[in-house]
Image (cartoon, rainbow, N blue to C red):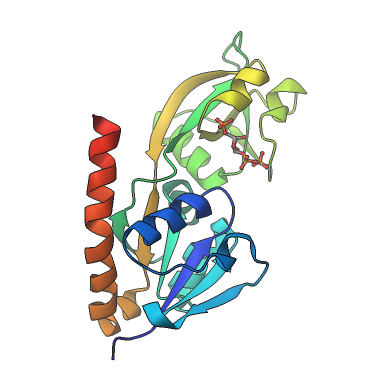
Length: 215
Ligand code: PRP
């Protein structure tokens, strides 16, 4: 019998698209997962167990092997820098990491940069050779330049509504973000057949969706 796969699934923004993708790949994802408060959801017929995780924690569960695989945004992967295998670009939850500020922002010496992604932001400005002071916030990052906490922010832009509605401007795009399927290094070897079978089911669905996007 095929090995049981423990899958760390991000709650929130990515969940809807990830569960749709899994369903399109023929995996039976129970409806109860869509709005349940249950944190561990076994799906014996698919030989899977879903762990409903806070998105930022998905790479941690996978690195420690309490989940064999997981779905996570490239933004979180870059920030967390965990020792995991990146198996597939799922092509969902497309957005970008950007430097944002007020439209009339002028360069200052040692600017303050507010962000949920301190590692990403520090690395970006270090590579540019710019000295900045990074301030870690946990949400509503767009407030920072509006109330004078920071000169700029590094944050995710999806539809652009948040920056538009707050009179901010996207100054530079740092990298494109999509969700990825990641695997624990040991699980990847020990449960290779099950993981490979899942990738084989997902790949044609991802390919079909990307032709629709690029058309
Ligand atoms: C994210 C991100 C931006 C916004 C971008 O915040 O930090 O604020 O979404 O999306 P948009 O371009 O479609 O407007 P999130 O909704 O996760 O909430 P947060 O402010 O609590 O981080």
